[in-house]
Length: 79
Image (cartoon, rainbow, N blue to C red; front, side, top):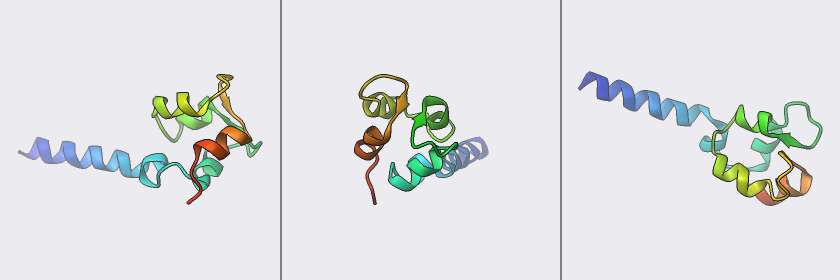
């Protein structure tokens, strides 16, 4: 029983610590992901905050490995 409780806590903590899951994808999350503040989110920047590759694949519409301003605007819901 202790193992199950610890596992549950670890899983919940992991989801809580990930901004993409905790707050949902929003413009605040996008700004946080853009570490070098160049207006684009590279796959490396994205992966530091989320491992949701299905979302990445959907947002990277032109498949260049980077989310540009338009893809960010469309892919991240401003809340």
